[in-house]
Amino acid sequence: MNFLEERIVKDGVVKEGNVLKVDSFLNHQMDVSLFDEMGKEFAKRFAGKTINKILTIEASGIGIASVVALHFPGAPVVFAKKSQSINIDGDVYTAEVESFTHKNISHVIVSRKYLSPEDHLLIIDDFLANGCALQGLIQIANQAGASVEGIGIAIEKGFQPGGRMIRNMGYQLESLAIVESMDAASGTIEFRKQ
Amino acid sequence: MNFLEERIVKDGVVKEGNVLKVDSFLNHQMDVSLFDEMGKEFAKRFAGKTINKILTIEASGIGIASVVALHFPGAPVVFAKKSQSINIDGDVYTAEVESFTHKNISHVIVSRKYLSPEDHLLIIDDFLANGCALQGLIQIANQAGASVEGIGIAIEKGFQPGGRMIRNMGYQLESLAIVESMDAASGTIEFRKQ
Image (cartoon, rainbow over all chains, first blue to last red; front, side, top):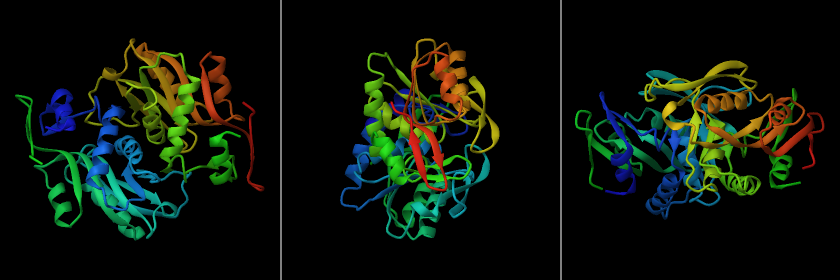
């Protein structure tokens, strides 16, 4: 097991309905030293790729992306926002995102000022399950003409279709932990061998 | 001028209605190396304080708080969420927050699991104007019995009442840039001498 899989086994909680709660260290309380380890690992896995910008989505992707970005010198983070703000100009890229967690559809937007055909993106997010958030981010990158050099995910639910679909489209998708199965009764988690 | 004031002068845009747009480096596209500088500065200003946890609020506080937290070893970040998620247990602290930017009232919540009387908090946010978000975070800290050791803000609008109110309550509030006045016509910004 790698450092993230170990942490999931130690502090993650498996709930009925294939819910994996990792809010003690990943997406409500956030262990930034763990994120720093993740940044080191992503820097290794995407070595050789030219990456000048990190793209993520609010809210739980932002913390990981910000610390990971420190391992890609010179790359700022752009985060897709879930609702229009009067502090953003009207000129935005936009995509629809369905949320498994919140059971709703939301619009995500990125200002046109911050993505362009010159951008070589690493997309970062905390979870990949059905891949809806990721598809929205890829759609926004495509609208901008930016190239997606890679996708870095903390935890992928390997038994849901998002990861396979993204890999089938030819993207370099690196998930630091891929959960193959979970059992709420016993609390056990099986990871895919990497 | 310090590093943040210089950056605001260089890349900030003053708009009518006392709006200061800094979304090219602070709260949409985020310059994480700037956040790292901010972390160093906060570590200096809060030296001597015992801080074991960083508290912030989604979305734009999260990036700054996460990078700043690397300068407070061992301190995780907890971010207050703006809407209830099925991934959070029902057992939460809650406060109402009025948003100047979005012109609405929202609920913010923090799971009771992640704040307790043992916690010595540094509250971090990107902006302080009327202080509504900050009052919500302080209210949540008080509900938890946690102590607020300090408050670190990137940009304070010194001509709005939030900062004075917070300082009058005795909190150590450190704003890296305090805007005294802005003029949209000329684009000029005056900072408070610190």
